Image (cartoon, rainbow, N blue to C red; front, side, top):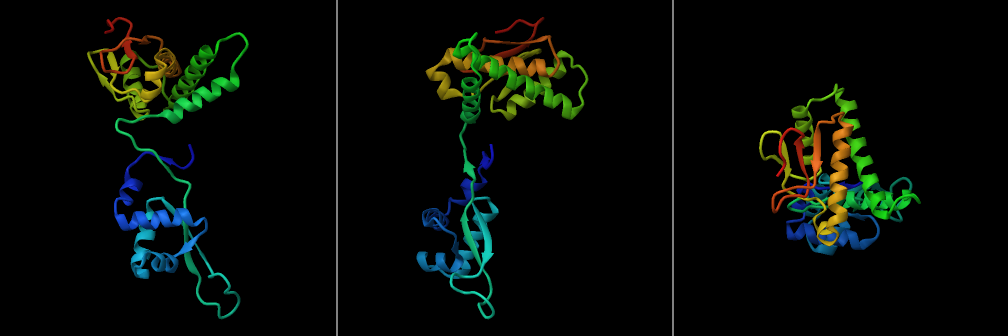
Length: 237
């Protein structure tokens, strides 16, 4: 999603109390402010204000532009000043990682595409599987992959699921378990729905990668995510 980041750099930029005060000031201003404006309002030097403002701009929290000060136009108006305003950056940091944005996208698409011959839950499973399938196909296309064997499929699935916050790990040979559920709070409220959506997404991913020998089952160890990936010739949990 546009403007969304999950790294901690922007959050770390606000760890300084002075910088946090400046950021709050700019968000409440509802218009672009200059270094001089910030220095006067906070009670610091223009140089220190510029340091904090540019640091936040470097981290993506603010955007800047140059303009003539209000009321100054034409020859003799002086140099343009640098103005700052909030960026559209959204910061989402959680440990372990959660992906409620993805769950929301899937559920919204399920509502939009709901067919008369399926229940609401079936629409959600279909949309999740389609998203997983499209993800797998895109990986195959960009990496120019030929049909994959089971081990190679598990390896690539491990990479993709790690990027989605599932914290995959190899439990035993031929088995890929998931330590984290990115939809944890939703799964606590509606486990049947969210666990089946997880399974559908991962099943679609495997088929999108072009493999039919790996299964995604609703079976896991206590404390793990609800889905386990395994070769069909390897016993699941």
